[in-house]
Each structure stands twice: as structure tokens, then as C-alpha cells.
Length: 164
Length: 214
Image 1 (cartoon, chains in turn red, cyan):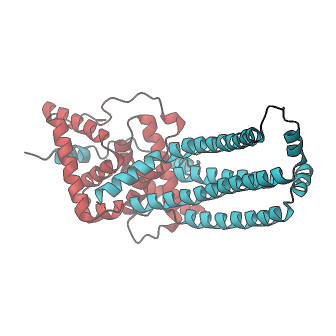
Image 2 (tube, each protein chain N blue to C red; image 1 turned 60 degrees about the horizontal axis):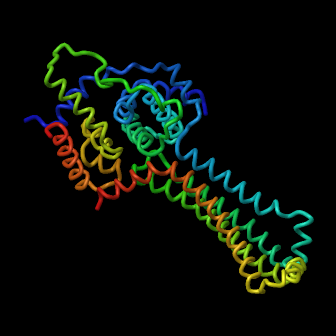
Image 3 (tube, each protein chain N blue to C red; image 1 turned 90 degrees about the vertical axis):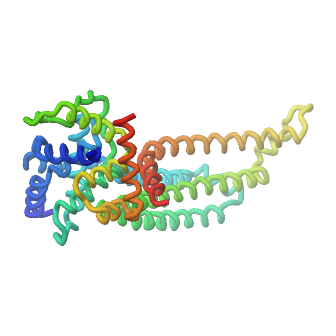
């Protein structure tokens, strides 16, 4: 593949890398696994890049490939197994407006989301990313109505975990 | 009360840019690394399977084997069978390639899963075909062996006096059946292990998606 293509890909990926990081955050529970999944997503994006025509935004296109990789294509490599989970993987930076009670709730919420299955995580991810139900249903390949129903069930599930 | 997910969203947005950034250099390195995806695994296993079965089909042609085939009057049968094997391998390779090419990471999650499952099924069909053929040939060879092999007659004649012919055939039948069973057992175990391990996550997610849509 030409160097230009490679350069263009690397630049766009660098700009949009937070999308991949966010998916890795939901689908992995330690730093090594995060890196491993990030790498596989990058490889899959690169493989699909020659067919990326630019008629959609790079980020929109990357969402799709990255989610597909996390849910379906990715297989854990050996080095990501048996590493210690990092505590509170969620909060890398302490915010100034620190609210203890809310912070505890958020921690619990992240833990609860980690317990969801891959498909539920995908729904949560797209919800957090402000995707509309039209896009959610198209990305997953389910109907819009069923995507809404499932989303409500997930909300209920999370509520139950928080308020048993 | 604020929705739980909206509380999470607030935090999610707040921490959106808190990830340690990967440099251009690192991305360059990453894109030259090998993928460990499920599709890569399926491709590798499929190639090994085709090689294995081609090997099994064609390794057996040595001098001794040809002699035995002549004794058993199976020459024509084996010739037809060899040609058939070539044709079938070519057809399966074509079908597998066609199915493999349709796997696209830009499809919807459900579509991607179903194309992977379809590709895997194609190669599994090839395996079942081979196993079926193995049993078929086994049975044909047994029938012709019993009819034409002088060793069987010798063995029959040298039976101890108290053994009945029924016992002889029963014993022979049982040992053939035993061999078949062991052979099938090995393959079954092999596929359970390989595909069970490989496909478990994918099938679970696929069923979850299907469940949502019903």
C-alpha cells in the first residue's frame, strides 16, 4: 500500500484515537488488555481503510469497525491474560469538583456496566456517545424498536444493581 | 431523579480526553503487526484442514496400496473417487473463498457475525463430507476385503474348533465398528475443542442479538 495512504491513515487515527480508547475502556478491564484490543482495532481499521471512501466521516466509519472488532473479531492474545486488574480504571484524573457520593455511584455504575454482556455494552457505549436509535439499530443490525426496548431493560438492570 | 446512564454520561464526557495518547510512531508500528482476529484463525484452520484432507486422500497411494486395491477389484471405484475428490476440493475452496471475501468489518454487527458463521459452516461441510466419505470407503473396502482377501479366508479356516462362524463375523464386525468409533471420536473431540474455543463468544453474542429481535 502506498506511503501516502499509510500516512493519511495514521494521521486520522491519531486524531480520532479516543474513540478506540473509549471502546477499550468498556470492553477490557486492565491496561494490557486495553493495549491489546487497541492494537487489534488499529489493524482492522487499517485493513478496511483502502475501502474507506470518505463519504462518511472517519470517526463514524471507525466506530463501526472498532465495535465490530471488540464484539466479534477480537480474540485475546496470551499476553493480555493473567494481569492484575487495575482498580478504578475509570478515573485517571481527579476532578476538582469532587463529589464523594456521586463519585461512589459512578464507580458502582462502571462496575455494573463491566458486568453487562458484549451486546449490552455496545448499546450503552452508543448511548453514552449520543448516538440516536436509528444509528444504534443500524450498527447492531436490529430494529429500532427493539433497540429502545433493550436499552430500557439495561437501564432497569443498572438501577437494580445500584439500588438492590 | 437523574437517570443512572445520564450520570454515567456526565462522567464519560468529562473523562473523554483523559487517555494516554498513542503517538504516530506507535500507530505505524501497530499497523505492521499481525492480526489475531477470529477470522484469521478460521482462515488458518481452514487451510490446515484442506491440506490435511488432501494429504489423507492422496498419501494412501503407494505400491502396496495399489496392489491391495487390485486384489479387492476396486481400481475403477478408486479412480472415480480420486477425480471426485479433486473436484470437491476445488468446489469447496471456491465456496470458502467466496464466503470469506464477504466478511467485512464495516457491516452491521449482526451481519458480520452471520457471514463468519456461514464461512465456518462451509469449511465444516467439507469436513463432514470427508468424514462421510471415509465411512463410505471404509464400508466398501470391508465388503470387498471380505469377498476377495485371501487372508480373511485363511483366518476363517484357522479358527479354533469350538468357535462358530457367527462368532468370527461378530468379532470382525465389532472390531471394524470399534475402529470407526475411535476415528469419529477423535474428530469430534478435535472439532469440539477447536471450534468450541474459537466460536463460543461469537455464538453467544449472535444469540443475544437474535434474542433482542424476537
